[in-house]
Length: 633
Image (tube, rainbow, N blue to C red):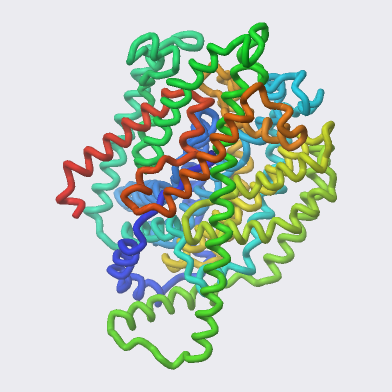
């Protein structure tokens, strides 16, 4: 999974936003020109934050694939960096330009755009799935895995590919920004939460800011010192050192049940919702605790006993294809669900627009509502006044799509130029559906929309070139759909912080350019230092082999599956859909306890250790809420 989204209660957000309206009213009267929001110190700070988050996101991508939403924390880091910098310079007697919420938003947008490339650039999925190592793990003699259908990682071609496909996503939805944010009033919960946080930083005074900075430094130092301590006890070779302590005994350790003392996974568990962490633990128990020990006893019966366990025709085939069926079942359900929600909401909004045009004279007279309308009008006025011309979006999309149609076939000869052109004809509609769905549900489903392209291109390109064409085409569509959705989230943040859309677009472009360079460098930092892709190591890159086998499945069909694997896949595919149905249509008391199939699928291939760390994180958060329940009220 390429990413898990965090949501905030909309009512609470609007309440806090209303408390800060009078501050925004004064700011809106004296806003500087949008070019003043983009500063040299802001670009330096966003590059630093983007680099830090890219390394963190890359580690999570190459180990588990579970990545929390870091957008809100990026706004916090931006505030801490610039506020600390200005305070230090003030002590030297040097005057500084005031740090505004607009500059804070610009830094957050740029940093998020940078690390988003590490999250969605395919380094743990389709790009690394093209490597020779994953090609060999899949099985050289596997049907559909044609000889020579691989391309080893390289900084040059990866950066070039990301540049030409990611910049297309910046322009695809520009003509529809007003439609999504103002006309339909989509909430984009993550973008709204970030805006509330930034507005709060600049409204609540020095004491609150000082407490936040002090808390950040305290826990950062504790995590750093703990990792430094662990480093002294790191052993040589896999399975050695402090991180591989058999916490629950040797028998459990053989099934990857142990606590590896990783603060990254504990922190990830603290950010992710409880249901995600418990779902991952359920998947660990179901797979490594029950299924794999039972299936391994069928060696010589279900699969040959004279082939290595890593072969796709051995136990590894079950480890790969069963989570694929869970992911596809969950993805298909959510794909149809989001499309239905989008269609129904579009129809409802169009009816509302017609009713407004028919009777626009009835205005609410309440003082509170009037103030809310006035503030919303100020936000809308700035958003429209500082609008991005329509021709910029159209021309930018045509130019970068044309460049992509030329460059992508040069990088991947297996994918023809007309495949790229056809993909860019249909991608805008998918990008709109994804952005609209994210505005309603906060779920960026770009990885599911891109799988449509994966299976279509795998079938069109044929057996010889199908795998490479499918993975490259999947990356092309994923990048466009994901970047356009991230931009809409950030435009929502800018709308609520009175930041010009032009500032947001330029910041996003700067961050995307940085990400196209920083993300490949971050990947090679791990690629050269660790054995990335080793199924028995820490950096398994579990989704790389999953994506490659999905491409093979698109080329060959079900003939690629080992014995009885198809029946198991049918069962898990149906269970993923059934769980989602129960979650959506049962009473809340039942639905909230339903596991998340996507989170359940991750430990099937990765192992159990990370889910234990994440559950410890969720236990810490749960205990903290219980102990501080009165303060939280």
